[in-house]
Image 1 (cartoon, helix red, strand yellow):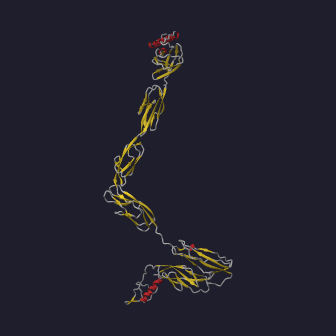
Image 2 (image 1 turned 90 degrees about the vertical axis):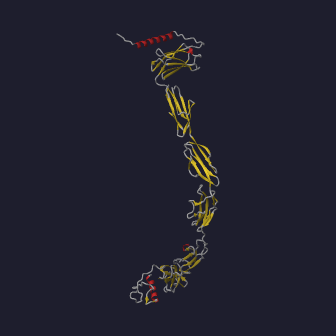
Length: 596
């Protein structure tokens, strides 16, 4: 059989044989060096493998972590072999010291810790895996106002790098960045290179601030004055106050006028600003005293004002001034109130140079008090007094009327006291009382009711007038009738003579037979009286004559005014040139008859 072996294979076989020989020599004939200081000696040796393969060019470091001796390092060769002699440590290693062996190959590493034992040789094989060793980096934004990215805990492969971005929020800036507790400044980015251990990165932020500078001219103040620092997005208010007899002339914000304002507020501040105020002399108004008046009476007063700028003054009223009020160019206020109350408003004076000034005005208006009502109301009984009632019959009170010179008809307010017991013979008294709205009591009126055992002879007890109301025109007539009733409200068999009466003959008159003749527009009460008994009132309303009648001429000229003839010229019918007065009277009589 022929076997072909390459040169590389031969080299590897030779290396393994040499390494084995050395190892055998080391185990069989260890010859440790003698420490110059007489320290216990030990030789650490072994093989470094990477992913299971013995690896040359790996760095092995030995450190006595107990006493902090400087590290000793060797590079593997001959198939991953290493050997480190503790005699080369500057400080003696004693039993129990913690010895750490670290093997690094490229970006990967491993380490082993052993307790030192006094022996010639210690075998420690070191295994490196391509699975990366990781180290945690913790990032924190220690104050509000920004972020660190990535945030929180980030695992980083050993030997790798990790970058961080520090970003302030709008209106904030980076105050400082601490890496492992040490400041690296207010940086926006930071990178951890060749990470071999854990780290921390901590960023702090601060809000941006902006200066607002305020200033003012003479004769007034602005508050706050000077430079004021304002946080980003915040508001800042300023108050502008003129001295006595001065007004704000203008306010400039960032060099631009915002008018003669008394206050100004910067909102959502994101940049620096300036604000300045100027002042000017103003008109001076003499305080206006309280004015008093009554409804319907004119209220006038003069506004006195002086102008330091020597110009004309213009007087106006603000929107709260009462409706109908005015003030003229000379400052005279005029108003006639119609409603009682208190009125508050301002008079405004403007010199056309400085800002207008105003003065408050208060006017108190009271109502006109009506004259005192001292007249007593009057009660009038209706029906007979006294009146007889048959025992066991039903008694109905005829009632009464009441009137007042201010309140008018107050009949509904009459209070009747007393009772009538028709089951028991005897005399009973009914009392009628009433008071007007002013509290004036009428003179009491009484009625006597006699309860009798037998039916008495018919006695005139009441009179009924019909109709109870009538409406006629001036010069018109209306016939009323009256019926005399006995105590049982039955018409008397023999009607007595009646006396008719009109309460206002200027409105209408009434004849002895009850014929009412209208005289003038108005209302009158017509009553009939007999034997001291007065009827109910018939209310007669008289209205003015309507439109003039149309007339036509007497066609047959016979001088007779009949239904078939209507004259067209009232008072103009003549026989020859002589006015016939009798015909005129006939015409007027006819006009009344046909309702003209």
